[in-house]
Length: 186
Length: 186
DNA sequence: TTTGTTGGTCAACGCTTGTTGGCAATTGTG
DNA sequence: CACAATTGCCAACAAGCGTTGACCAACAAA
Image (cartoon, rainbow over all chains, first blue to last red; front, side):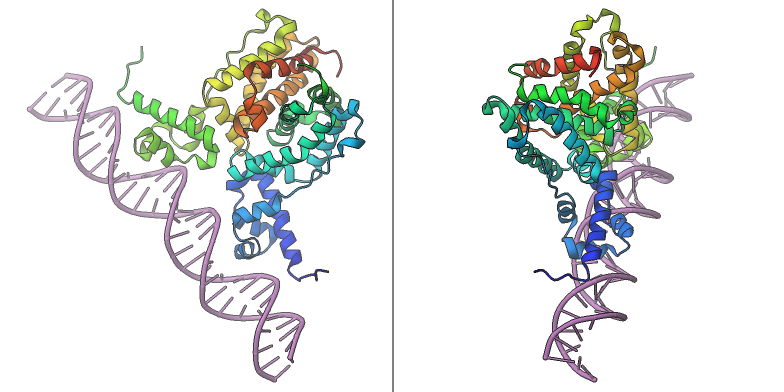
C-alpha cells in the first residue's frame, strides 16, 4: 500500500490548475508560470513533479472514457447512448475540452486524441456495426459528429448550439450517430 | 483605378506565407519571424504593411464562402450541395483550416468563425428550412457536423476519415445535414 | 541531538517573441 | 539633375517563456 506523501495535495493542485488552463487556453498560452500561480506554488515545483511541460500535459490529460461495453449495449439505441455518454463526460470536467484545444495545435495532443478515439471508441463501434471490416470508417464518422458538437458547444461556443438543452442535442445527434453505426449504406 | 505598387507582390507573399503558417501551426506558433522567413523578407516589413500580428491574421483570414443563394438551391438536395460545397472550399486553400486552428485558441479567431457561420450559413439555412424561427438552431447543428468533419479530416487527421473519398463523405454527411435542415422534428 | 530526506522558495540562465526606429538603397517625379 | 517617397535590412528593446541549481525550513530516523 502506497503511503500518502505530504506533497500529494500540491501535486493535485498543480494537476487541477493545469487541466483548467489547458482547457481554457490551449497548450502554448497555458504557461507553467500561470499554472503555478493558480496552484499557489512556485513554477519550479511543476518541473520537479512532472519533469517538463510535456510531462505535465500528459499527466493532466489522462482520461478514461468509461464507455459502456459493446455487449451490454442495445444495438438499436447505441447512437443515443453514445451521444448522451459523451455529453455527460464532456461536461463532467475539463479534460476532454483540454484535449481538444491542445490537440488542434500540438502534435502530441493530436496523437493522444487519435489514440483515445481509436482505442476506446473503436471497440464499441466494432461491437455494434454489421460488418466489422468497416468499423474504423464508421468510428471516424461518429467521431466527426461528436467532436464537431463538442467543438461548437464547448470550444467555439456558437450561440444557438450552446443554448440547446442536453436533451435536444441527444435527440438530434442520436439518430445521426445511429445511422453512422448501423446503416447498411450511406 | 488603383495604381499597382511595387510592394504588392511582397504583400501577397506575406499573406500567402501567413495563411500557410496559421493553418499549419495556429496563432501562437505561427510567429511573425517564421512567416517573414517564408516570404523571404524582414519581419519588420510585416509590421509596416499589416500593423501588428492581429492585423496580419485579420488580413490573412478574410474569406468569402461563395455559398449558393438559397433561392437557386433545390430544397431536397440542399444537404448534399452544402457538404460538397464546403469540402471543395476547404480543400481549395488554407484559409478555412487556419480559421479553425486559430479559432480554437484565439478569441478573435473564434469570433471570426462565429460571424462567418452566422452571416454566411445562416441565410442559406433560413432559405430552405420550414420554420425560419428555428433557423439558428438548425444552422448550429449543420455547423457542428461540417466543422466536425473538417476537424477530423484536415486538422486532427484521423486515419479513416482522411482516407475516405470526397464522394463518400458527401454521401454520408449529405443526409445528415439534410435532416438538420428540413426534418420536422428530431 | 544529530543527520538525512522531503517540500518549498528565489534568483537567474538562455532563448524566443512582438515590436520599434534608424539607415541604406531603389524608385518615381519635378 | 535634384528631391521626395517607397522599399527594404539591421540592430536593438522589453517582456515573457521553459528550465535549472543553489539554498532554506520542516520533518523523520538514528
